[in-house]
Image (cartoon, rainbow, N blue to C red; front, side, top):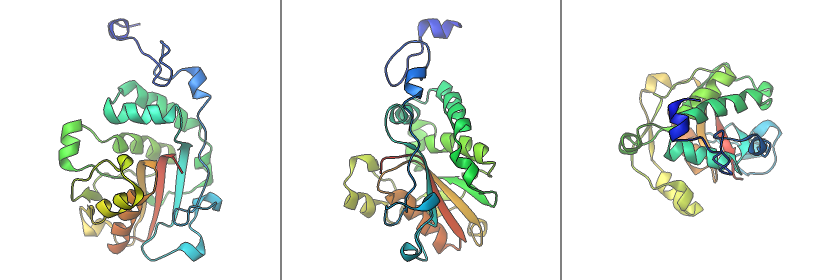
Length: 224
């Protein structure tokens, strides 16, 4: 045990038990997310968009990894607001156990995190979707590229808003860093939590308008 562990002992983010940022009992509560179509939100094999739901600018599919329940919701909160570096290792450990990834072949895709506005990233000092996205890209053996999407306007935290307001404020919020990086390419848009999907859908529409071939979404957790 080092000096920092004595001065600032580690406590489970979910139950407060001393010893680790995520205790063994709470690890057992982690649940895999169900697959559903990101357009109509009904069950779909592997999260592939139903043929009848598909449009020119829609997501082509969605992969959600965990259910947004304890302790995953506490892990995300800690990463978002306190960025406990040790949690990065714990998350990586849990991702290595996820067998869901073995069903997909995203070798031809690049994983792109949902960006923060420059102001919010400077205030926070990091983007948690980049932290989580890198870990997931490593697990999928997929290229990671945080220089594809850019945030064009500041938006309020989506979690506090009703569905209609989420859709309204996120419209036109994203742009691309370079048009040359988009045309004919495949992308996996990553966000930490899927709630209504408004953010991911807006990002997918942006990439499709710029000529992206296929765009899937991938979320660390789903509250659907």
